[in-house]
Length: 104
Image (cartoon, rainbow, N blue to C red):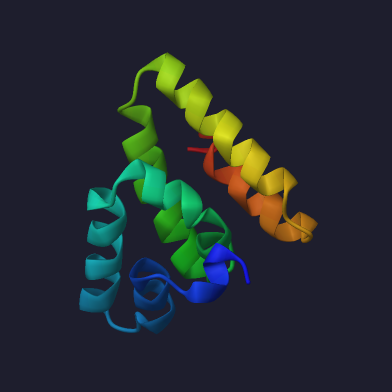
């Protein structure tokens, strides 16, 4: 069982979000969650629907841009290792996309 299989509160909140207010709570949870927990949850975030994933990407990029260059490099490296350990290349690509700051 992977960490994303255990469905953290964040992932469940993202999956269950239907209304605007649900999406706001989901985005706020991403914004306030400790980075180390978010890194563990990247596979689950990558499994979300396209709309919810894109919302998560926006919030995550905003947070990561606030980190120092060294911390950004470290976060990117950790995410790369997480992506490399996945059997799904689609999910791995989605995780790498989060850290592609050239995309906005």
